[in-house]
Length: 463
Image (cartoon, rainbow, N blue to C red; front, side):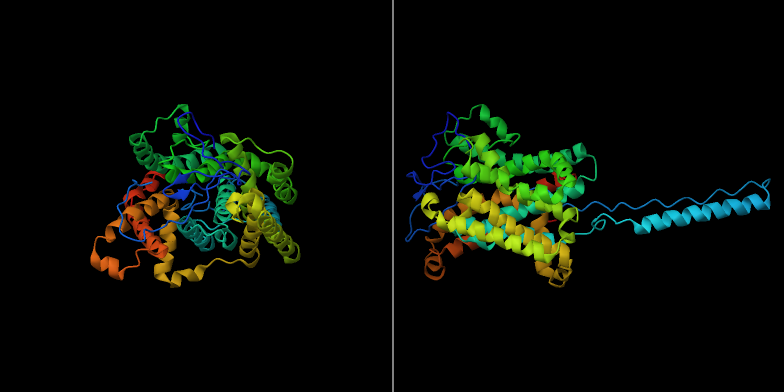
């Protein structure tokens, strides 16, 4: 991500610059930037009543998408009734030939291996549950800043894999139509959210340059000032997702020519960036690094949808996945001095291999053992929550940071109420976590309807 003339680049920002001193914001040091996205810091609570001096500081499209209907073989039409002038012998021969042709067609159809497809109109609750977990993990990480959260569940890698699987399924239709649909469903929620963020930054002395075009089409990181940094720093995901959508028609064609070699070779770019050539520290470099980091995950979604993983034996998949996990963890823990910790978000190479191993196991478990989480329907409230999270994934991702930011001045006001000060854990980050989720649930019906409009559906308060 580059910094325009209206911005001052904070020290320590950029890939591999973890050793420099960082400036301050909100009383906390600025997070280090390694690959286009930031490591959040825990939100500290005031130890005593104090006035709040600062104003308020997205897979992802495809969350509510229904898989395409399976294609079926055409059934030969019944032979026309012969005209009455034909002889009985001719009629008998015609019927015999037709029956023979029909039998051959049926035999060929039965012998052909069907292409894996989802049921028309059906929801895959396994994928829905993974997406919901990923969103919860994102909010948790941005609240507490736990560096081990990415090791427990690499949410961004999982979300890219799920989006890649849906994209491969959708590309059974014309590519241009699919891309237009994806872009249309992503941009209106982004524009709606961006209107408030840009307006607030303009009020706080931000003067954008030509880079403001990225607030219209986020092919690069949208610019902003330090005051609004905590809100716009999450947009790296939307930028990376949009590029994957645009590249998917070509990626899928290449993948289908040699699925397993292409999948393994997708790990090469990040290794090259680490050991041979480091991308520049600007918008181009950040975008290239993020694409390389999550390319394997996106293609793993292809592998699942195309049935590649299902045909593999556990003896081949499990050891390789565990090896990728081991290498990612080893690299993260042995390079803490270089990156200032073991947070995967700061270490692209470790993020790539850990996410690759984790996502492969999740996708393989789904494909090989045919897990569908259909039993989730027995837990009505949990099932309903998963549905809402998937129908409002973009809304939750975009607005969750603002919700957490607004939670700070709201909790500050609680200190003015003696009963709240005495009985509520106002200093606890867990309390902030709860207030943040309360504000997120308020944002879902207030702003989530924009996703319905973008998808050309009837607007609803809840999906």
